[in-house]
Length: 281
Length: 338
Image 1 (cartoon, rainbow over the protein chains, first blue to last red):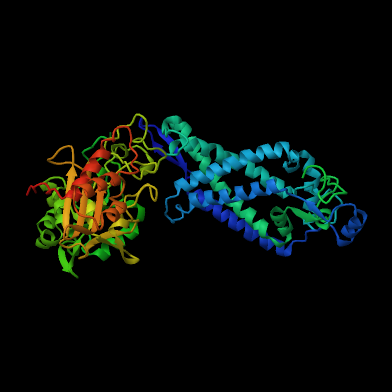
Image 2 (tube, rainbow over the protein chains, first blue to last red; image 1 turned 120 degrees about the horizontal axis):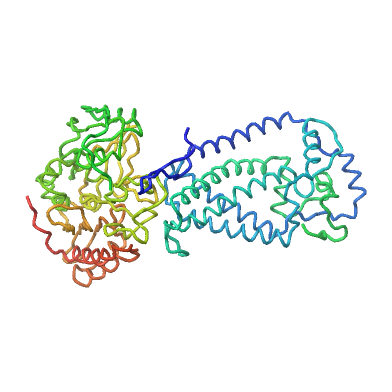
């Protein structure tokens, strides 16, 4: 199977043009296989959560916490859903024609792309200055949590750390999305010069043949990768044991019990007196 | 530009005797076959080595694809019917003069003898960047060499460009769309009938195709209903060389009159976009109006609304405006040459 498509430039040179659309099918099937495999695994998983008794005890000792703890403020939720909508439009407009559903997709695609880029720029500013920027990133400090989670997954009751605000899987997913999302956005902005929009005078010679090829291939690789990533995201969002996280992205809050059951209070500190916790959320 | 070589790369030649055999071969070879109708355009592609099919399916032995028969007040024309036969057919002359005028202006007499109606409507674009063998959008690449600040794009699109600015070069296509023709397409899955207006595909829908034919499909016939039989027709083609050339712009119109009032109309312009451009807004605007200079003037102005020109094809805007005006006025069509 060829992964890359090549073409001839006017100077007779072979230049990269696209990724092979077989990669779209590969990513689609990988996403579906992942959710089937994970769903099957979860039927028999021995994953250990914090015990009810332990959570009861914690809840009894933390009556100072509000009943509802804000997990995502309105701005963060709006960003998430705007980005989700634009991402779905982008994926459907990009890949439905490849799957055989033909329609005029380009205009919808670049409009959704601009919405995505604008929302990402907003998110970078918002997360950098108004949210706890480092709470979503992964690093060496997360190795103990990773070990503990793996052991819990195997059925062991270990005292290792619970996640802070975001579960480890959530943070790893965010990292993957940052890489693919930025790749697809930066290359998409460059590709915008090749189509007619109200923003630029169309100029496909803006990039050299090699530069254009690399841009299109990067866009294709990131785009096809996003197919699998988005399938995985939607799958986890609708899983029953993850529904409380999804619900918090709709309503903005989780209960005190969910906070104590799933998080390490020491790693995600919330206020103790007001209905809305103090500090960054 | 590609260099025409003397020797065509080897392929396996099939000359089926029936449509069933042809569609079975097309299904068998899927993306790696070439359908040979009159062979006029095919020879360029094959000799330029821009198409290197594994198999060539020559339809010339299939007698059921040739001929014109009357059906329900209209006509059914086999896709392999030579254009000259279309021009000379008495019912085409009598009832569907628009098709006759358009077919009469295709290329040269020799080419019309060899070329087929199905081949003429299904032919690929003439964009020389595309035909030069460069990997442009239409050839599966990521650039349009014709729509750049320095491109030579005198013949290219002023409407509905979507990355690619190539145009449909067919003369008979606008006439068939105006006559509300239907295209009969066969594959191993069966037969389907597509309105001529939907047969042609723009780059926004599929940038690598000019029509709806998918691998395995073969155009077998073109049906012309009686809807516009005997209407007042107008066809005009403007080209660089009067003796033999593709259109710079052509216009086909069919008007039904009630006295001097236009009761129904079809106006289609070719070579201004990748598909024959039906002017539905103009048709609606002139319906119920008298056929006079004021209506013609209005129609011409409306016709070019939304046109977007490239560096060298701005002339197509006044040309199209005037052709549509002339189509409404009903200036006599150019004299036929055979």
